[in-house]
Image 1 (cartoon, rainbow, N blue to C red):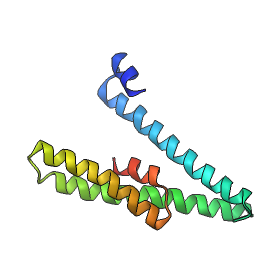
Image 2: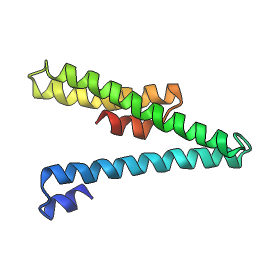
Image 3: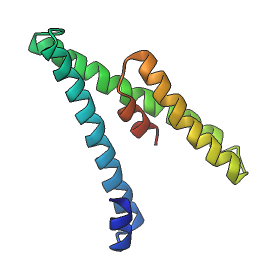
Length: 115
């Protein structure tokens, strides 16, 4: 989708907003699917339990992403080597997703928040 919008001549700022919103929607869909699957399997049967789980998974993912993104931003300000910057951003995505999985929060939202 990004390539199509870029080819259409969208300004970079608007392109970033559209892509960010798309990532956020994908992350929320994963969290909702996970909650619905757990409900269907008999776990967290009440609506309040599902809502609380959704809030903790989504909120925890966003909070983790913002924290790791801030740390990476601070670290990248010290780097002046393009290959080091690229490696650091790839490590950011991998580590953020792994930590999200270990904490049982949304990995897609964490990675989107980090970006």
